[in-house]
Length: 85
Image 1: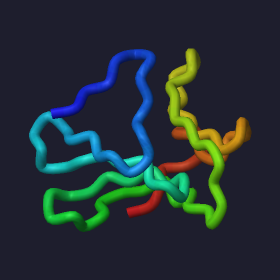
Image 2: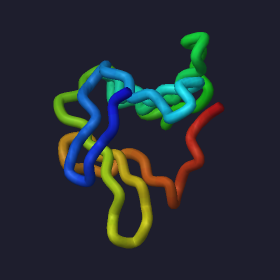
Image 3: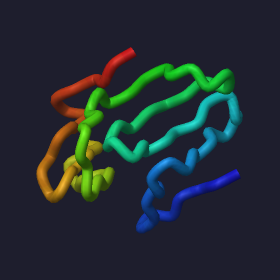
Image 4: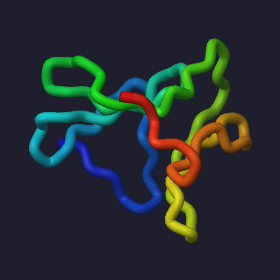
């Protein structure tokens, strides 16, 4: 099972399974961060899919907000969006 260190990122398209392996997380090539069920059905996503995406990065800020950036601009934060089911 893949795990992330404090400085690691999630490569585009490569899933990171949860500890139970019933779900997995994936940063897609279109900048949408998605949680999939084991059946490959999406369970939750950030709703940030864009047709052109050069560089997406998700990180946890010191204030506790989880932030998704595209080309250096915030496109999703846990403080302002709950994502989509």
